[in-house]
Length: 189
Image 1: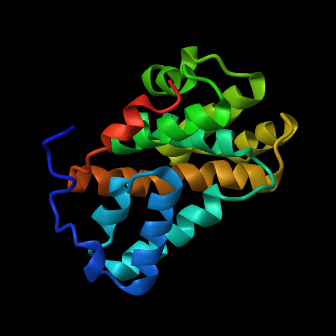
Image 2 (image 1 turned 90 degrees about the vertical axis):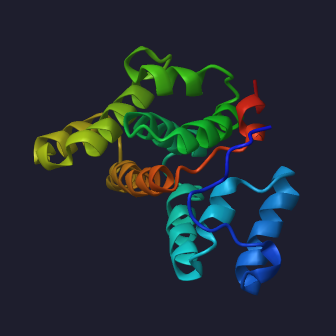
């Protein structure tokens, strides 16, 4: 187990949190068997916690369009580009579970160009990385290319929105020096 603190910033006790936040964290703990550090690291600012997870859930918990594994691929690839240890490790574990593939998260985090991806996944990851690294250069031609490759407008939006949201998340995690839970490292290996 790590001796490093979860965050550079205050980490509140569950008992001191507003009821809705404490209940959400306890639900996650019941489901996963532990509390992912992001929950307690962000809980010291309740209004921002609520906004963060509302946006997260709106982007990541959809059942239409991109699959949940595809959504996690975007997170892992863009979080690696953004040097976010927490998100690469935590979402890498989720990706391994959702993709039923113990190798894919490491491949995406290390070198997405060499990852074993389908053509659709490659197009999606490449567009997500463009959004993460050079969104100002995206043109109508880039959108048309994604459409020509079979992505719907909603899927294209989701790819960009996930990359953008996790750019913010990556920066918060890096600011806080948020530590991944040890449990994530061995999940689905």
